[in-house]
Length: 125
Image (cartoon, rainbow, N blue to C red):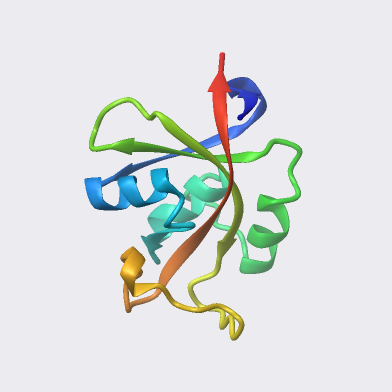
């Protein structure tokens, strides 16, 4: 497992229920979902909530930064212990004809962000 220094990445901490945590840990679930709310914009892009970017700016910037985006998962409200590189964050308002929805992974039927998980990594100090 590749190691990444915490200071060299941007970390998004997410809390999961047991079912989804276990599915991600086993490799069965390859994406995570968050409701389409203004709350998530600054967390995905590290921007000030009062100066929201346009969609074009948001998606052009989030994966072109030098720092890799890491999603840190915790089971309930305890210290995060599972880390993945985020391959993409899909816009809830865009249509992705090649993408298959995954209700078996807990994907909601209302507008939501899709966080595509990539390589599992270890965060070190």
